[in-house]
Length: 112
Image (cartoon, rainbow, N blue to C red; front, side, top):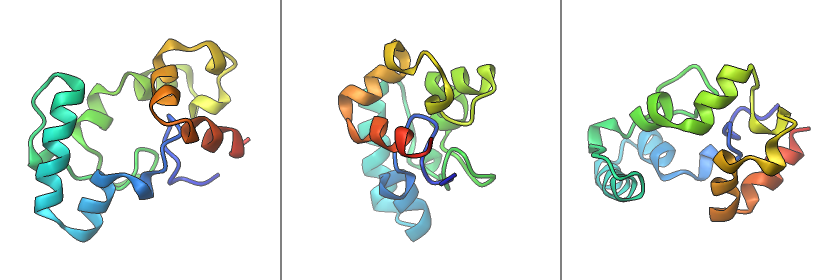
């Protein structure tokens, strides 16, 4: 199973938080922190933007590690990804991800 496909189906290698971490790019960290703060209605600081993928053993952003409701749900249910959940198609939690980026659902289906 491709560990760079996140629990929600995002491709971690295309994520700006992942890119900022790999490149050690502080300017990109600032941009991501600002955008994610707006999206999530909470303060996310540039120093929080360090992530090596949500399903890897490495670093994770504060949001992905502690705040992501999708990740919390999958872990609680014992699923490696939402693609393993029989409620995926009707789930309002991961459904937001599918609406924002339809490729997330395709990524999850490709792992099955």
